[in-house]
Image 1 (spheres, rainbow, N blue to C red):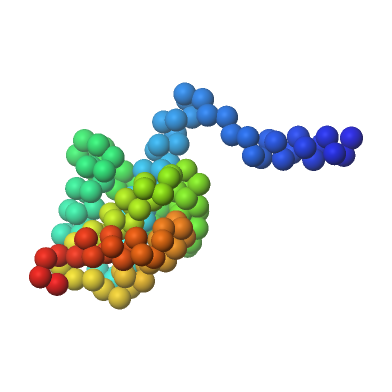
Image 2: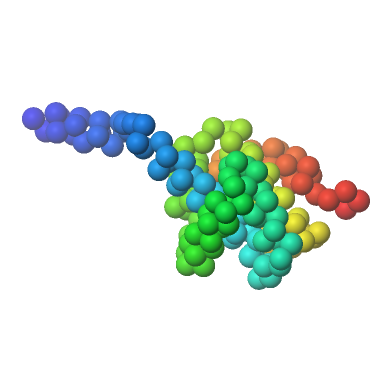
Length: 155
């Protein structure tokens, strides 16, 4: 009896049922988690410039194929979450468990683009992107290539 109970508990934890109704909620949660991380990187140097905001808005709009209004709404929601952010773990774990390696690398690439949005890379932005990439389990070699790709020409 105990073995059956343990089996049921394990099964209920490990089996996830994805219905058509779950897919939009999942996608919305992934978009919000990504946007929160983007906002956090933009704020890492304690200066959230207009160029950074514009870059975040542009990247969110193109990456998620959203209208300008939808992108602005997502950024506003993410900004509220990032304001109260205590730990990255909730957001990075959501992304880590729901995205493949290429998708996680794409997010790290977006974060580097945000970090370089104001034309320079601050040490706090650099540190935060490296921390997030570690939490997403993206290899350090790939992270460095993405960083180099995001670096503005001439730097």
